Amino acid sequence: MVRVAKIVFKLKATFKSEALKAGVAKAWMLKRLYALKGVFNWAPRLREWLNEPGYVLWLGLTEIYK
Image 1 (cartoon, helix red, strand yellow):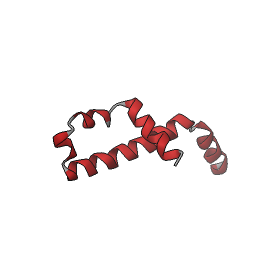
Image 2 (cartoon, helix red, strand yellow; image 1 turned 45 degrees about the vertical axis):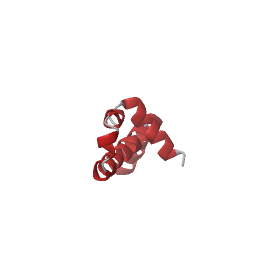
Image 3 (cartoon, rainbow, N blue to C red; image 1 turned 135 degrees about the vertical axis):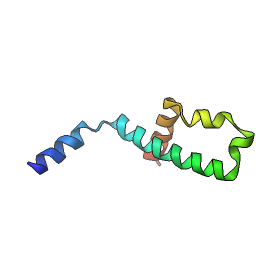
Image 4 (tube, rainbow, N blue to C red; image 1 turned 90 degrees about the vertical axis):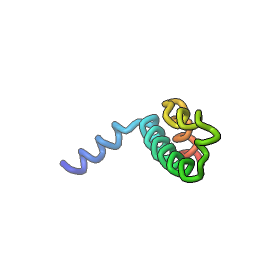
């Protein structure tokens, strides 16, 4: 039963959800890096971009297709 559940779980995961998951991870990493380096001081709108769903999806796609 556990094997079947794993297969069903993998089938439920769509490409878009995987891209979003990768994008959220990348956005989180970039937020930390940019805060440390002071990038948000001279580019404050970048913080907003890192929260926009479309941009996060794009980040995820770029991570998947490296």
